[in-house]
Image (tube, helix red, strand yellow):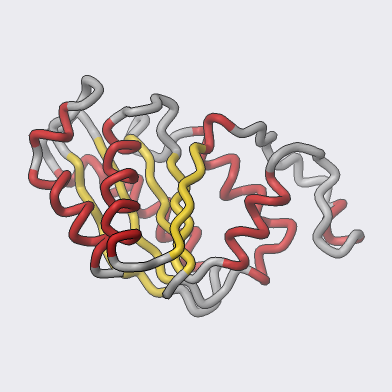
Length: 178
């Protein structure tokens, strides 16, 4: 059994990337894994101010918000799923703030399997390349990180449109095969 942490960056509850997270979660739970999904937009997470208080305080951040327990969950997990809609060819602000805030204890986040979930209105996968590169940029900083899979949710804009796409089934299958 693996500990799977899904970080849903979607600002829309029930939005397309959030629905893909739910399907991934359903598959991983059906496979017997311990799975938790965090909707990042429902948490209070400030942006990193580069004060480096964390370097002088054993990884304790100067910002007192919801980030510390999330970071602990990231450290404790075996699998991290990063999910975001494409915003101007990149990840959304909510998830970017969370990733930046891992700096307080970034060296403790290691040996993780990474899965990426990306959605966009465009029908072309290449529109998601920079978003995936943002995820890979973070994973490149994680010692022992292994990229295990990507769900490309293309051609979706309105909430729920993803249910009619092949990626909806792929998300469940990928979760099942964690």
